[in-house]
Image (cartoon, rainbow, N blue to C red; front, side, top):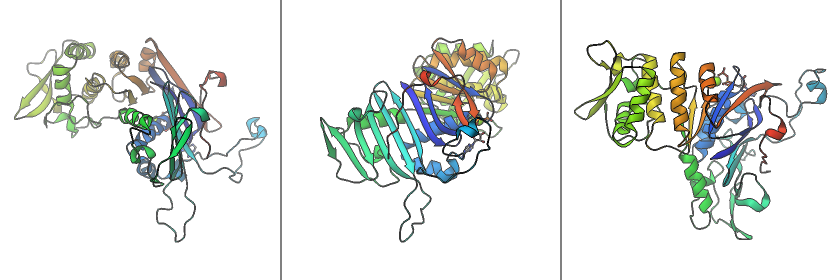
Length: 388
Ligand SMILES: Nc1ncnc2c1ncn2[C@@H]1O[C@H](COP(=O)(O)OP(=O)(O)OP(=O)(O)O)[C@@H](O)[C@H]1O
Ligand SMILES: [Mg+2]
């Protein structure tokens, strides 16, 4: 389980250390930084899949995602006596992402390349300056297990350090490029842990959404990100998952309705028998909210729960009356996976807050930077970034 998430230099997250529990709800006003937390967690997940540089480029590159405020605020600015003024940058451009749990921690530091001669056309690609894996919740020199500085990786060997002979490219994470189970087993553990994280963000439910149409069905223990394999995923829950929980989730939200997966020539389609109708409704006839709820049911009742499940604004297009049922499903999922929900639906937040073990993280802006509301520095987990 992750106990700490740390982000520095990403949009309004100048430096944010987030303590995490089993079931976490991230809330806050518009613009407080919720989506930025979600996106930075996705970026972190991309590092273990080899896609962090591409994902950053798609967001407009490091320069655009970088914290746009000053490096420091003077006392006079904080006291309201002076306006925020730009000063010459003293510190290097840096985007840092990291997390830790009880057993391991990981952090990555991305920066800009030195100008080259002849100039590279990839001059705007960020480069990975440092990556570290350590044991325990906080980085300490004695707890460091794998240490990458620029192209060089060192692994701990008892009291000594061993250099990995092959250098890594500036745009590759050590996690995708180096996997030796003998010298760095913890690297593989951390990589596989990150790769198992699952993200769901705004399923398509419009008239042409793939989830509405019959699709070739195979065993689907994990719903895809676009939800196209919804019918197969629901049938998989029925056959190898928890069919009673599935029926209960449908009845909880739509009393008297029954879900049926129709199959024809290997194609699976969601149909729903609704109270008062003479024939079941097909996927194409379901309302946006009904379809979105079914997608969330399939995601949350997965027979193969991930280590971490992240849901971004799952309330979109759901009627407030459905939110308590959704909260119950989320709470159930949190008994198998660590769950993080980003939401601004008051009813969903309130229902989740009533669950045992849930933790709400309210974000707010202070001088343009995101911070956790009502958090004393002493309440925040200890965190130390690796230096360059
Ligand atoms: N490079 C940057 N530096 C500083 N702040 C930035 C930067 N880029 C965006 N922001 C600000 O970061 C804030 C956080 O945006 P974010 O999308 O995370 O908010 P949100 O909590 O998801 O809001 P909403 O509820 O409206 O979706 C916005 O107010 C935006 O103006
Ligand atoms: Mg948002």
